[in-house]
Image 1 (cartoon, rainbow, N blue to C red):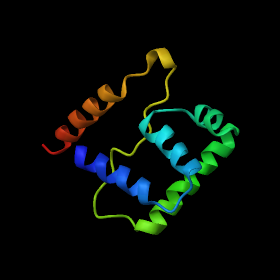
Image 2 (cartoon, one colour):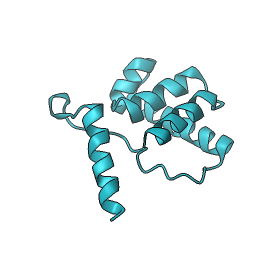
Image 3 (cartoon, rainbow, N blue to C red):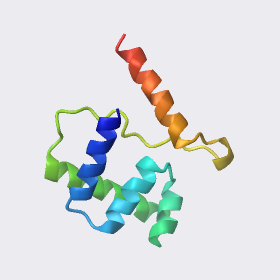
Image 4 (spheres, rainbow, N blue to C red):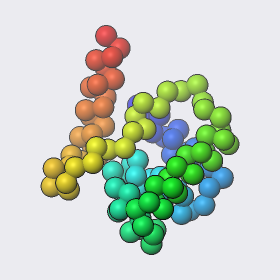
Length: 104
């Protein structure tokens, strides 16, 4: 799992996308921010933030052509009110438990 995270970070670093796109992807997928929060960071609205994230993912996929690694963990952290959100560490711990239960 840690290797997958490191691989993803390297992919994002080397991706042919602007820092604006990188900020959006990292904020949404790794920091668990909402489109509204990502938009606030970028100085745009919720809808534009979503468009930026989708375009960044398209560009990354186009450049690297989906690698043979599965990226099940590349899911946004569930959107809940801030006081109900779990920490990133807890999220990855739960995700690891979920993956272990799949492997039997």
